[in-house]
Image (tube, rainbow, N blue to C red; front, side):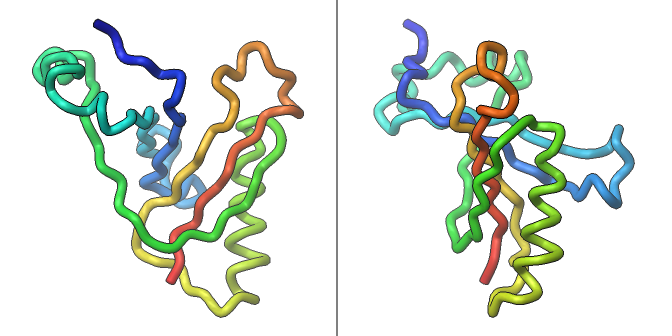
Length: 127
């Protein structure tokens, strides 16, 4: 039995700042949310089989995030992060929290959608 991904959300987890980290060393996890009823062991493939494929279960921490909705291609996402970090954050009453930035991809597939129609929410951890 496969996983039903119709109710899933595609999430990206950024571990490094590409402006200070060498491109070959930037770490990023591509994630797929699963409803709770699919995360029990009866529905998930064997953990060792997933590990062989480089797939692991990840629980994302909660907390407060600033959100910016990015419209357009993925290559211009760093520019939108700069709007949050350079323009919005210094003028807000918030500080950057020690956590990973998250990206929520609203389009199920980018292949069949014009680049200007792509929607991604950028989540900046704050406190």
